[in-house]
Image (cartoon, rainbow, N blue to C red; front, side, top):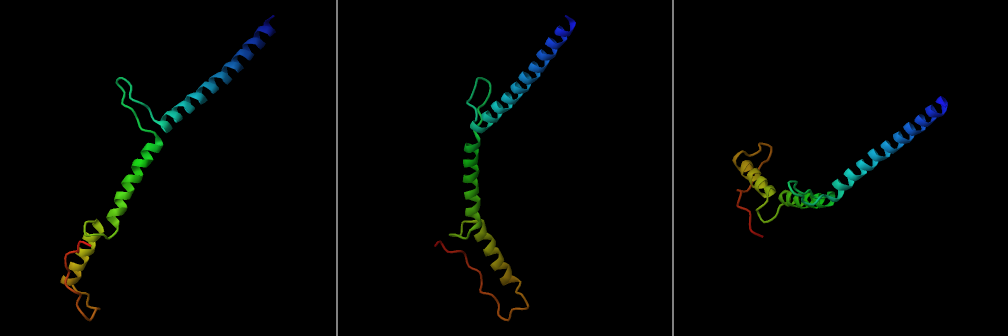
Length: 110
């Protein structure tokens, strides 16, 4: 009788370990899916955007940064750096160059 009881307890313990591992796995999957798709607002808890929504925001920010790195109508950071370099070259000419650079002008609005 004792051997049967021991075997039964062992089977129950093994089944419990498998069930517990399955529950942990499905909890992690649920957390991943909540992060992927985001969560709606709940009372007392603000909602969170999903991964694709956040990536769209990153793409918009990246396009604004790329705009600043390309020369355009004088409004970008690149235009300001180029103008500062022209002014510096005019004020401090390079001794290796034989002719002085043209005086810097304000960028045109083209």
